[in-house]
Length: 92
Ligand SMILES: [Zn+2]
Image (cartoon, rainbow, N blue to C red; front, side, top):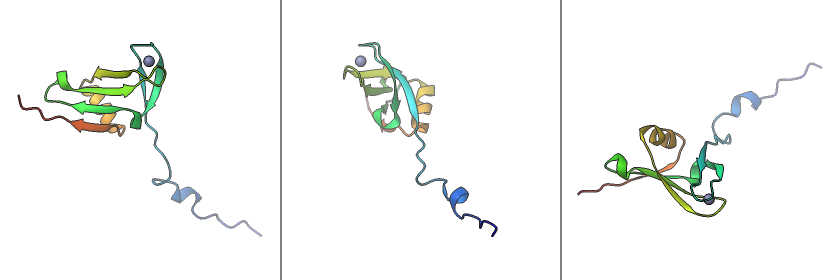
């Protein structure tokens, strides 16, 4: 009458099916709203210099397209969080 062990519950629930939701805090310079964005809502563009490296998103409040410079740390954070990254190769 002893309960039999339930297979799969502890062992199987790693990896697939478990969404690791990375969210990033951002703020809109237009309407001053602050919010959290999922990785899929952000885009990162890496240029040749830090002047051309920036991330962008659309404000969920006012719909404004926001673009902000991304330093090394932010780049690391965003790429690590699964944000779509665009590499710009500019030969000037
Ligand atoms: Zn806004």
